[in-house]
Length: 63
Ligand SMILES: [Zn+2]
Image 1 (cartoon, helix red, strand yellow):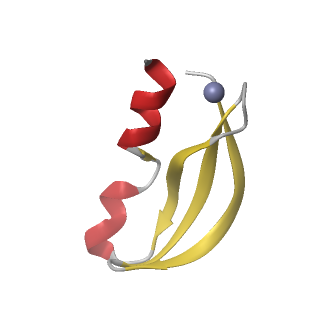
Image 2 (cartoon, rainbow, N blue to C red):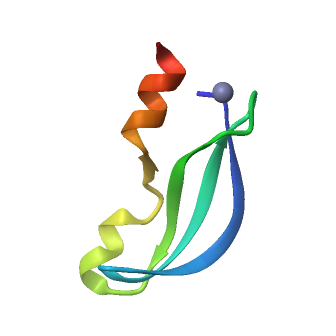
């Protein structure tokens, strides 16, 4: 997939503090979702390196 990753930033989510980066479509620059760069809670570590796509955007992109 053609994506760019934006700058990392710390964000407080319901599941605790995470370092995340927005991901963009490389063609049209639309924000597609985000990537978990770092999770601070041990129980959230499995998210590190994972990409989260907002489903509505994916549908729009592919159809
Ligand atoms: Zn696009």
